[in-house]
Length: 302
Length: 279
Image (cartoon, rainbow over all chains, first blue to last red):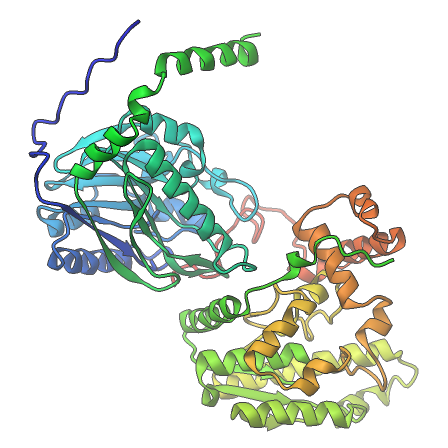
């Protein structure tokens, strides 16, 4: 049996016993299609997060532009090297930043994207793979779909993966992140409220279940940052959350209100949880790949 | 037989709904540059709920209630409208519409009562929009989801507004919300009526009760149940077909006028911007 080679530690990876990491969840209400205003909003939140000692500041999906853009998509698009993003990273100093933007590729494709930046540069861009085009959603009309789900090594957070909203609802995306053995899974979202019969908004309840389940199944910290505010009658519910690798909530932002919510976690908790439930270790990745190949042959190659 | 497959699917968390709707009103008015609102108050449950929400969201002095009675408007309804205004402490202007409506129909004495009802609704709309300019507040819609789906309203009349907080709530869902907001019992207890003519009730005119039709609508529209499934659940076939036809036939009322397409970018077809863009 082939055994997987262990992942090489990142050269900058600090001692496992390093101080706890502090994450700021910036639950903002961007102005729709107003990049300049939204940049100011980001800079103010980054300053507040740094003052609170944050090592990482996370903004929601499409935080620089707002969500329901429709034909404004090309008007608000940026390249990952854009001055707005450089300005944010420079303001963040030693802290890392995750924020959402419309990315225009050199082929003039437009992606619903989110970047991870640290040390003054963008180290990873995730392009949303699953573009919801049903119900109230219409993303495939305006965006090209991303074609990769990959993790990366961050300076202080270890192995990190980013998913955007609908990506988080696909088991395959979570399974790939488990195979990537992420320490931290970040989901940025713009989830509109639907379902008002229960004690809380139905979509919020589902997100909570997903975040807790994925954190436990991956043995990773899962952080979901969701926006607030309204767009054309859609109400974004906020309720950002950080969940520890045991599936227990670490911190939760308020429902419906703007907030900067701090979550702190200790990397040692990852070790303890993976000893208690070594699910990623026991995963039969090759078998899974073979089964998926078989399904591919049966479904697509026949 | 009136089936009751899943009545819980019409349940709402009234505190959560009131919170979202008040935030919605402040937000949608604010982003258009307004802090004030204008509501036509009839004395019925729909406009009362909207007035209570507006007073809660914007403060009573920022809400203008407009009463617009016609000579046949019932005294009980007028009294209920006045009570809403007094209890909320909102601003008030009374603009009776009898003179202009009757002056118009002198020329058309054979007009049906439906024409009269529609004319009254549109007269009230023009008054609300004029008061909107005077008060510097936006007109709030008072059409609920049941009416909007069934087309039970006057296009460019009571269906017209800048912002509608209750258009995604069925009629029967408005009652618990009304109770939560403190709408007086006398308004919640009476039969729904547009007060279109003496003795008119919505349910008498429609031929079914809101309780029945809302149970059907929530399955048909929200649940996307198919006809056979609805019949199997015990709904009357004639009712199912009639309601489906009303929804389809009145869809034009819920849309902008159709534009003949000629160019490569036609408004609302391939020229698509959110209404809230830039705000």
